[in-house]
Amino acid sequence: MLPAVDLKPPFNITRASHIVLHVSDLKKSRDFYVKIIGLVVSDETATECYLRGLTEAGHHSLVLVQTQGEATCRRIGFRVYFDEDLDVAFKWFKDQGLPAAWAEVPYQGRTLHVEDPFGTKLELCAHMTVRERMFLKFEQFTGAHAQRLDHFQIFAPDTYKSCEFYSRLGFRNSEYLAHGDKLLGAFMYRKGTCLDLAIVENTGPKMHHFAYIIPEPQLIFTACDLAGNFGYGGSVDRGPGRHGPGGMLYVYLLDPDGHRIELCDGHYQTIDTEVEPVRWEAASLSTNVRWGLPATERWYSHASPFEGAVLNKPEKAPSPLTLETYIQQQIAAKAA
Ligand SMILES: [Fe+2]
Image 1: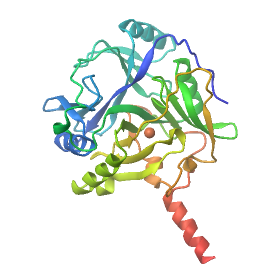
Image 2: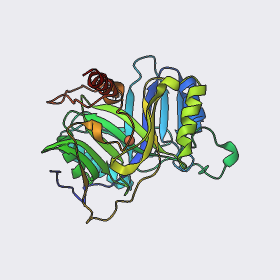
Image 3: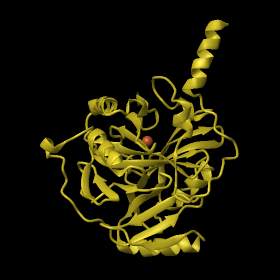
Image 4: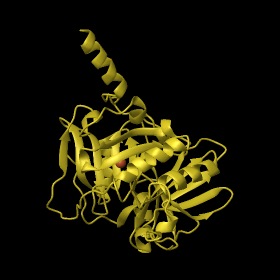
């Protein structure tokens, strides 16, 4: 069912590290991520803002870049262990006929820009400028006290092929969602918890959401309360709720440009090689919650495009049970 994983991959990606987003109003977005999510500003200019979570020593896990154009996702970033891994990665991507180019990025060591076979824009680096971990600076805490970036979820037009690609790079599945032989969702990791990269089949490549870990479940409600008070009540996009896969408590919010962020509590450890991925049988992507109403159509279809990426549709369009359809079904059942 799942592609073979290379447990000794050609180079060592260690974890999801950072994300770079275009935003249409830098101050507005900065306020959203500081006052509601609780990130700390590491550095900022008139056009860029570098933020990190309270337990993060790396300079940034979120970079906001002012744009006059479309508010796309520029790149999702992963760490490799050593600088040498970058040289191996450069050659590996070139050998596969995939884009690979060196880039100069502030506060990062040598940085490599690469793409997966569907055009997902990736950034690899081994080092960043180090900043103080802030998790004991209680007097400075804001928002939901976001601790660290945990994972990304992307849309790909073929989950299996995408999963196969990342399996060659050592990504393993903690859990997956399938219907018969069809893989619909792959929940993959490198760092030894449930997730670094979730892949869901839909028109892509797109960035569906990025997730930060919060330290206490009630902070999910704090984020919702603050979103309401700062004028983003309608941007609480899904939840609070509890995932089936991974079992995390979650809420999703849309930032001022519609980039989606998830706040969730932690999940289990996955390092040991003998443990098999957990299969979730589902005819659609809609049955992976433990309780609560289905997500809206917006949650299933809206995602941030990657800058300059060409979109491809999946062979079969996804047809999840949306909240809209669910309500129509309830009304029809009542009338019958
Ligand atoms: Fe997630």
